[in-house]
Length: 207
Image (cartoon, rainbow, N blue to C red; front, side):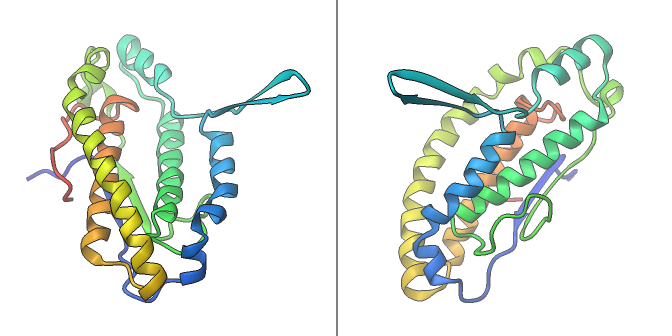
C-alpha cells in the first residue's frame, strides 16, 4: 500500500521521565504556548483601565493563499509549503510536550522526538484544482470522530499525568493513543487546511 503523504510519529520515552517537570507541566507550558501563539495567528484581547487592548500575532497556517494558487494557477509555492510544514512540526512538539510525551522543552527548530513529514505535491499533477473548494465539507466525518477522540485524549492526559508523577513512566498503550490522535488530526489538517494532498485521510490511529 502507498503510504499516506503525511507521516507522523513520536519516539516512545522508554525511560523514567522527569516527575517534577511533569507535575508542573501546565506552568512550564505557558511560555512556549505564548511563543507559539505569536507565529500561529493568535489574537489576545486585554482589558484594563476601562479600555480594550488587542494584540494580533503574525503568521498562522496558510490556507487561503494555497487555495487560490491551486485553483487559478495549479501551483503550490514551495516556501508556503515549507512554512506550513515547519509550523505544524513546531505545534506538534508543543502539544506533545503538554501531553507529557517528551520532557525536553520544545525546540523552535530541532526535530527532537516528534517526526512529521509531508510529501511536497506537484500541484499540476497531484492536486485537482477544484478539490480545495469542497475538502472542508468532505472532511466533516473526521471532525465528528476527532471531537470524541479529543475527549478521550483529555481523560488519557489526566491518567498519564498521574502515572508519570507517581511512577515516572508513560504507559505505552496510552502513549500510542495520544500519538494516534495527533497523527489523525495532522492528516486531516494536511488534507482540508493546508491542501497538500487529495488523498482522503484514513480513519485510523495507526501509521
